[in-house]
Image 1 (cartoon, protein in one colour):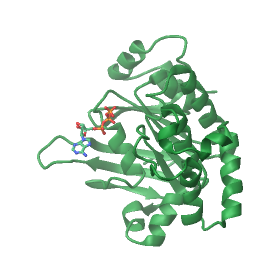
Image 2: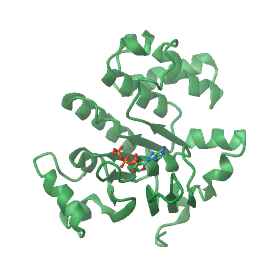
Image 3: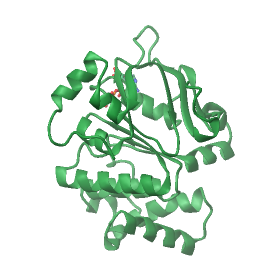
Image 4: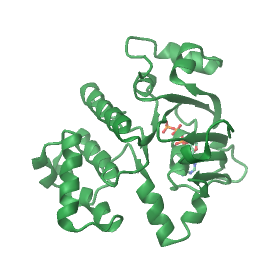
Length: 267
Ligand SMILES: Nc1ncnc2c1ncn2[C@@H]1O[C@H](COP(=O)(O)OP(=O)(O)OP(=O)(O)O)[C@@H](O)[C@H]1O
């Protein structure tokens, strides 16, 4: 890991993480280092099967590395996962939103109930304080309050995705991990969700990991880009560096495939 950044600014780090799902199989992630600070919005791009989701899930503590370590404030995440307090600390600090929200909500609870739940369970807020916080986050994400009283099956996929983001943000995580959260949305909704995410992370200093096939969306929202191929980081730098002067052929291929008006660095 780089030595030029004060350790206190690194919230979440991967230290040579490897994930091999089956003995003898090629690793899905083959030794990646990264650091996420409060000012970092790291976009992870690469083709299908390159290991992006595996890396994101390891960062969230949802997948255990075969070797290497994920560290939250310097503490190995595997240690945190051993105790209830540690798991709770990890969930407060790091939230993960997946692409497929169809099964991530309890079908019998209203969306408001689901968004409120982490406040009751993780932050131990009372019901009134939790409701006030839910309203605050729904408003910031421009979600119509009436939608929150519906069951998950009674809203669109795009609306459910916004509720999944609200449920992650409600506990004010220090790092938000978004795994292909806009890929299934139509273009106009994609833009709105990206704008909300960008505004929120910039305003609150929440670190962001944004996994996507889509280079334009990723470049828009990110301060840094990690380009992965076959489980390895082939390029890692600021958006300006990677988009402006790519050093690897694979990055140049990705950029050529996505050249167009939407591809620009986040300011
Ligand atoms: N639970 C699992 N068990 C076995 N192999 C897996 C598992 N999850 C992922 N893999 C394999 O690991 C490799 C990387 O998959 P991963 O989903 O991390 O890639 P990705 O870049 O996120 O792909 P996509 O963009 O298609 O989601 C692939 O070869 C995949 O088949």
